[in-house]
Length: 454
Image (cartoon, rainbow, N blue to C red; front, side, top):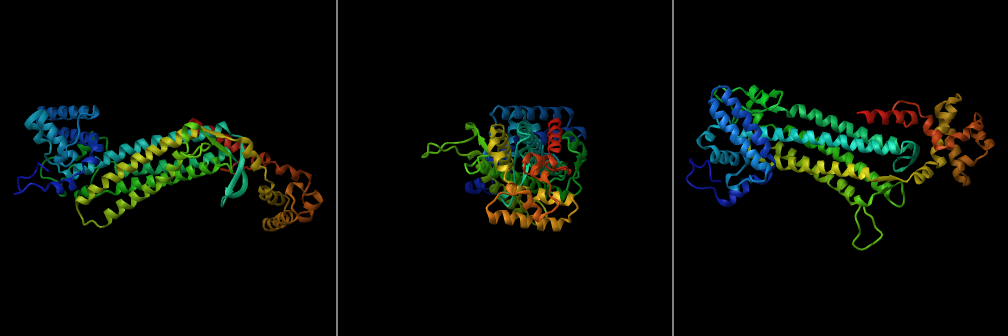
């Protein structure tokens, strides 16, 4: 590091300098660092620590650096260690001595805490928008195939007929919770630490509320020590990202299974599958396999952050520098995964005949048979036992339930009438579901319409 060395008799060893700098991560923080500095300079001018002319000159210089960064002409120099000193040195080159006034009543401790908060807030906004995009893609799949019936699964075994659209809506429900978690995390992230200084605050007449308002942040810190050392918001962002990644991984796994030849429920477009280097016939779902595969790395970064934080004594410690790369990497990976999933969903074709054929498995109607008897007045447990015995008989005799005679059915439930055979139509089964949130056709249609209006 070539700056801030007046109190030292030696320059920092080059290898040590390389070790402590954070240029690679800080490249992602240029915009938010400048944004924070503009707010700080504006506040300093408002309270009289800068003249109006000095404040305007500093802000103009910072805006020029931002334009350079957007044009790819401002690249951080490792000799200046971090984004903060790089911006300050570039500002000095542009406007001269007044640049040296920018850091008044500020430490890099509260500055980096602000940068990370602003960065995480920007990524939360990006993730939320992408979640809505994926949800729209899921509902588009649902609407396009809204009356297609498929087997629902528990324990990866056929359970009951459900609408394909209902399955898509299940993933939308998961993403709803993810959206809410990110939205909730944003409330605790949107707190300005500017004014906390290194950890004790300042004797200068600053106005942290003014700075926060300039940044659109609704709250300021209540304890200066906590303000510079708090990275709970990073951990919370990574936790929300981890759960979102879990849901994307579950969606990816489901689509991979459904696209296999053994299921053949869906087909994935050529533009979202890759070729084998050896087997010409292969079309591999590599993009969503990587969505699934990257989930472990997201988990790892959450553990990384928690492990860093759990061993720190009170106050700012340089270990906190290591909370930057995980947030930046996870944000990038999660946003990429959301984009890819939306593209895959837009290029997915439902193989309706295969789904409908599998949904016609009469064994999946046993619960309907139980409920048929319940509606005839048979106690549920008794009805369950009767249908269990009936299913066992069909299995042992090698017959399908829907091929058994009415006389045979009556041996296991005297309440059975000819209308019982209607239940073996999976379309009838799903239409009959009327409980809120179920796979009932009318309910699913209404949900698709509601989602489409959001």
